Length: 315
Picture 1 (cartoon, rainbow, N blue to C red):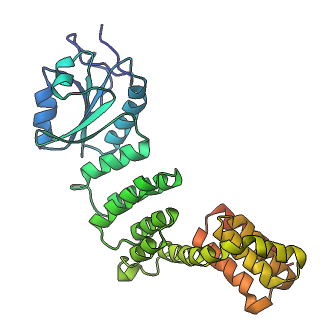
Picture 2: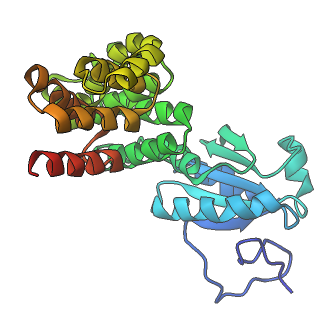
Picture 3: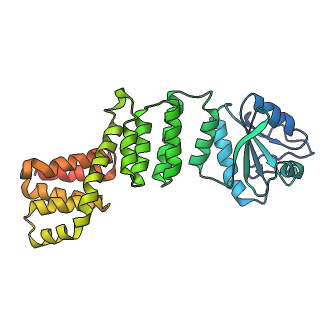
């Protein structure tokens, strides 16, 4: 009876496999007898990812299906070979595998890259994308890696996002969305100067791209907020002492934004517009527009604040 791997597919064994078992043409099980052909020789045509696993390994059961899904989506640009180390301990010894899951990449018959442990799908996708870039560059590839970068950024993995944005810039120097994304990574880390330098890398025809404008707006806000944040308590006290002091409320909004309380800043600016929309040449409304641009039109905070602003202006 054939052994069944964590993905439900037969694992390589001395017994014959079920010829009707579903199998991707880009994925196969292998062992000592076929390793040279399945991996070493095959890697002379396309990169071959080798997933070393075992039936008792919990993280292997998490990583395996992700690897299979991403490799299948690559449509032959990369292959996946799965090796059960319980049945192929000689291979594990030769490659000095001490823990699993262990993933190796072979090109031209040699191991060239890899990683240990179960990693998030976003990182798996970036890993596979980096292997296929030679034959799958261009717009579609860039969009795929940008999506991976955004996913990593949203998940709080700024380092991984920065690597993905840099990967796009290697293929397409000056790509506006990659430049903006990398600059936003520096902003997230508080490095305003590096963010500013990165924005200068954008190609001339991308200078007015929405993503670039958003980061420029965010950079401007950060520069203003850094100085204003120090006066947060003083500005708050002034507003509490005199709610009609619009300048104090405006300063309070800047200070709140500098202290990473953007929702609070929006509320204070909207309050100024509500009390006196023409104050200081509509400074509050204009600053709201800058905040909207920095956050982007689809940000829930933008949508909510725009709705509140419209309600005030057209009441």
